[in-house]
Image (cartoon, rainbow, N blue to C red; front, side, top):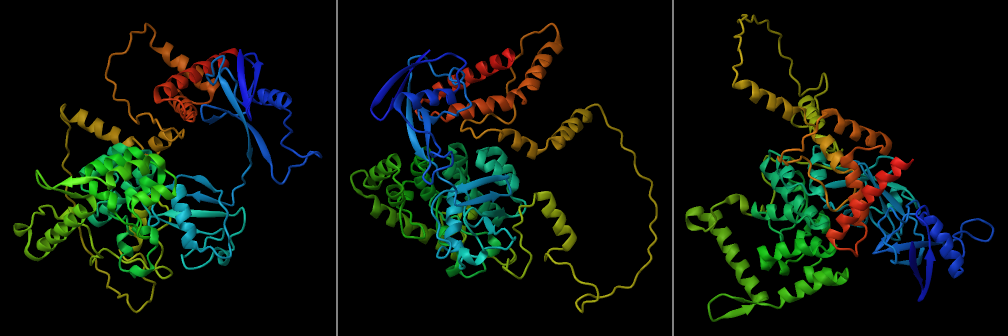
Length: 530
């Protein structure tokens, strides 16, 4: 097998066999171009350490991979580059998905506040700032107005990220883009569910889940509406709210470079391109600052377009947006004052909530017990049942408690009516038991086995007949053998191969799928040869 290696306008042809790893090719490249080792002359690490990396089609080749197993054909060109090793400044530990997110950018711990660091955590994790809170290594909550040095945060430290109780499954499903499962995991409270839909829209804009974003648009969620804060925090002062709480999903899509989600937002409502965030910036300004060229070109084209309001007359988009917002304000005001019979609004749920509502609860930092502990829905509901609706159990002997005299009641025993199932009720009961046994957490962890942008479906919907096999145990025996030697089942192995193939960004999608099939096939052969 012959490969071409390019390094700083120089090219070398290397002949290699099928048993050579990427690490062996790196050493041959060092000898061919006279590149020094990654360590200093005495064997110790240098201060500005640069590592030799081999890249192919936009992906870095791992030093443990075999050249032939990755799917690199003979005659391909590999680029050798020297990259500076960047050590993370701070680590963010997400409790809800058990992931550690490194923060590479430089941080001044004396001047940076916790609010500014929350903005960094939001960009790294893809969550809105109103969904989580940050804790230092001692478990103390970090508030926005204090500096990081006051919480004893140092270089290489770890910050814990916790979310609202009962939101674990909802956020994990939203980050993976499963639309139907996200809708099933919404809260039963209407105000909380509306806030969760705005959060899901923000997450879809960050990760590029077009299907989830389109479904939320159909349900009435606006792409130019700020995500805001949790309903139980809306009684607090609006001046103390984080500046990124006024960020909209279209701003996040422009910042993350998700052109597919951005097109869906604009095609649904072209007025979203003129939306403003907390810093009075529109999506075009965000795309230009973050150097997202495709998003900036698309937004620039739409922003300077003209809209037809009659057959012969048209106005610029900026004037059209002002006219439409004026009409929307009049429509909403007429609905609030005179009702739906004098307004074109027929569904009050589509109206944006302007403020807090009586009865939706209050969360006071430092006084009441925090509801941000990343607990599951079962544990959060158990705590509410134990402590009551106010979140605190009354102490014994307190003046607010009243002693009630014990009463003895006699309950008349009533014989229970025995119900016998009919033949028509047995299949229904079995389906209900099967649905209860299906654990959503196991399904989530199984789907998250790899960080692939091409996730496999959680449940197979293929109803086509399978080929006839004389021995029914033959197929299962073969799969069990592969699972034994590979250390994972076929589904997780397919997800892993897709995640590896997805790192080759310069290849089209169908070529990535074909490369994943090649990686899976040669990986199986490698296991058999051992």
